[in-house]
Image 1 (cartoon, rainbow, N blue to C red):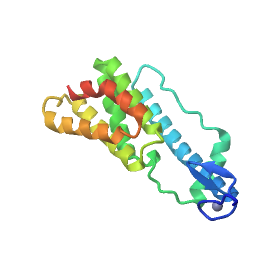
Image 2 (cartoon, helix red, strand yellow):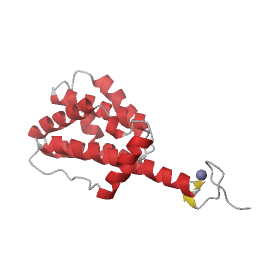
Image 3 (cartoon, rainbow, N blue to C red):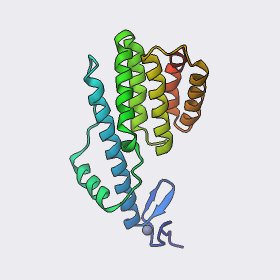
Image 4 (cartoon, rainbow, N blue to C red):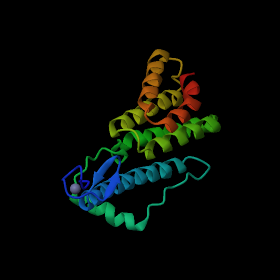
Length: 189
Ligand SMILES: [Zn+2]
C-alpha cells in the first residue's frame, strides 16, 4: 500500500514531525516553521538590542538568512498562523524584563547575565506552546521586577508559587528547565 499524506491523502514523500506528508503539505509545514523561526529570531534580536543598551557587553544575535525573509513574508501574508509565537509576547513585558535585568546587572552582573541567557533561550525555544512561553516570560518579568524594586522579601509565598509554576511550564523543555534550575534559588531568595 502506498504511503499517503496524513493531511490530504495524496502520496506522501516527506516524513515530518511524525507525519507522512505530500509535497504540498510538506512545503506548507516548512513555510510555517520558517515563519515561526523568523518571528522568534526577530523577537530575540529585539530583546538583545534592548538589553545591549543597558549592558556593558554584546548580546548574540540570531542570523536570519535572507532567503528566509522571502519565505517568511509569504507566510505572513498567505497563512494566518496564530500570531502567538514569541513574536507576540507583549513587547511591554519584554521591555520590562530587559529593564529589570539591566538594573539587577548594576549590582550582580553574574546573576543578571544568567537570567538574561535564560530569557534568550526561552524566547528562541521551539518546544513550549506559545501560551506557555508567554506565561513563562511574564513570570520571569514579575519576579525580576520584584528583585529590581527590592521587594524580594515582601512576597515570598507568591514568588515560591510562581517559581513552582515556572518549573512545571518548563517540564517539556529539558534545556530550559536545566538553565532555570541554575537561577531558581536566587530568584527565590
Ligand atoms: Zn498532503
